[in-house]
Amino acid sequence: MQVFATFDHSQYVELTIRKLEEEGFNQIFAVPLDKRTEGAKLFDTLHRSDGVSLINKGMFLAVIFAVIGSSRGFELQWGPISWGLIGAGGGFVMGVLIDLFLVALRRKKHKVMRGQQADVILVVTCEKAEGKRVEEIFWEHLAFGVAKVMTEMET
Image: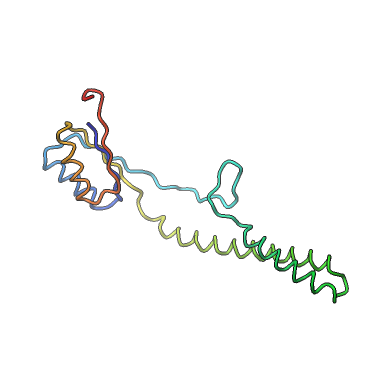
């Protein structure tokens, strides 16, 4: 049986490995995961989306400013259609700029987190009867998640 667990890259990984070795488990494999090196893309494509839309506020403000511009355009020289289009364009640009600013703030906050190490996966190969004890050790040392897999010899 193999027991897998994910940990934050911290002293808990070392404590877990030490505890497993004290209990007699010698087939321990630790795999540190790499952190993402490139930043997230600003614009989405057809095949990839990060859930961040830059035009929501732009469309909302475009509608509001188009209505205001066209209603005020009856009193102004160029007329309601011209001022409605000017209001729509101005509102859209303003909304996109607001969204860009908010996304930049969020990304700046996430850059602080980029200095941290990535997760570590621990794999322990043991007998089926020992699997429960290995799982308990993982949970005692604050594992993010634990999974057990039966190997071919034991099925």
